[in-house]
Length: 535
Image (cartoon, rainbow, N blue to C red; front, side, top):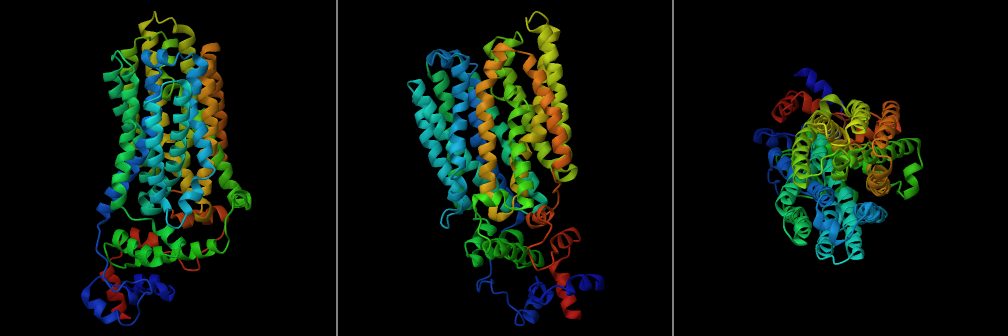
């Protein structure tokens, strides 16, 4: 016990164990001595960590689904004749229809961060706004009577996707404890496949409908995740970091007590609040602009990583199986619409399993090894896929077709294990608060700009150079893996404020951080109170 006293005894007064206790007796002895300025006269209502995790998990899932439905929908629509025939699509127009969402996403990237920094909007308000724009876009898309109407609808949906992709991951990263952050932020993207499974299942039921509802019905389903996202908003709090940043410190402390301390101002809660407050006080004195993204060495390092994460998420080859699986299977001699949709459905089930597994293992294995080695393996998969398709594209060899399908599964689950959980969660982790939303907006601009290029060019490339495209893509993956190996920073187990120190080389909080010691050694409040008594 004495060692614990020595460990905590040198902390500044803000962290003094004399002011913290969980037992009623200790409260009576100590409560009159010191009182935090952020303690409400009314005791906070306890909310268990389990409830917080459930709320944050549900928030991550439904918001991730809003993105997952869209890309899966387009993948399935590209296999359905009624959709292709209604809009009279060739490979050029098919690429434009799929890529149009990226135009809106790039546009949204220029103002998404400003929206969720508004005092009365915040992260929750950003989620709400993205859902409302989704309603408009899906309405136009489902009722589209010509190409222009469909493309305009896709642009609106793209704007909504970017606002959501800036708001929701930021919410999750700022809300949950450091040891859960990688998993929950990863689940945001992993839920993409949960939505994809449902979307593909709906496609399997509608593709035989002899009318435009073969594709309109799939489009209409895109509303559901956004409806659920709006319904959950009244039951989750705003993030403590945003509340502190807009000078609502009492509310921030209340959220931390309720959700991280089970209603009690524990040492963990006090340290967490002080660390957040001091870092944000520093950052408020240094107002951020877009130029701040490249102003310091630490920020330039962050932007370098975020740029290449955005590029790699689109150019590793994921769109071959993520958006144009039907075209890939056609080129491989598998032309049955039903068989293509069934293959897509089973791929999405496997993807969901591996995405959740990857989210879970990010804290154990680390971000950098997962991203680097997976990129190498995907490059190898592409080489094999190219070689197989060059030999068995006529579809006359069952063994060759089966080998191609197996490689598609292997490539897809590898991407799901690595990039799906980390392409959004890793950027949001490495950004410090003052540039977090702008940095995430930059991430989305890069991702969707290259996404537009890739989705527009890919069907044309597959038409003209077929299997050679996979070989080119495989070489790119190996080069990208080398770049990741030498430039990424490992952040597993660190608080957001500790990650800042790794990039900037300096801590912006004047108080020592005891968060990990308190959590890892299970220092109970009652034990801390007994230390106070002995003192």
